Image 1 (tube, rainbow, N blue to C red):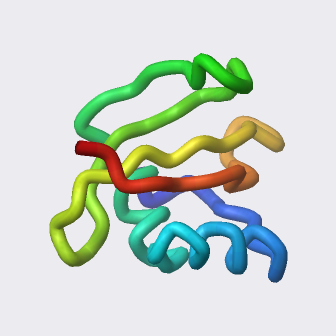
Image 2 (cartoon, one colour):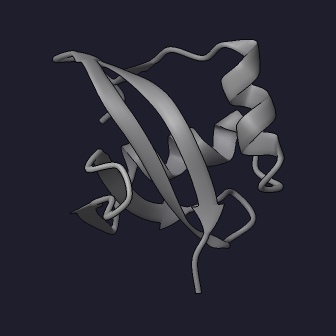
Image 3 (tube, rainbow, N blue to C red):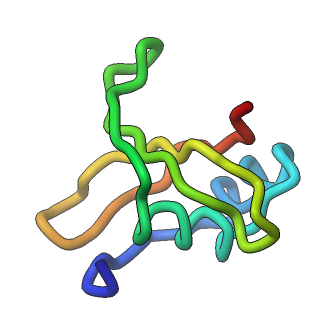
Length: 78
């Protein structure tokens, strides 16, 4: 899914960093998912994948248009 564009702003980068993740970790999981779901809390799309260091993570996002996503959050999952 290299065709996906990810719209990052400073606030979202900082929020993802609060979970000890980088934008590169987020994008790796987003573009190479091993599973998909919908967030129970927000109803937004969620993908599961791996951070570059091998941790399994969940990434939550919104579609801006058919090829662009707005990152919302990411976190490590067991």
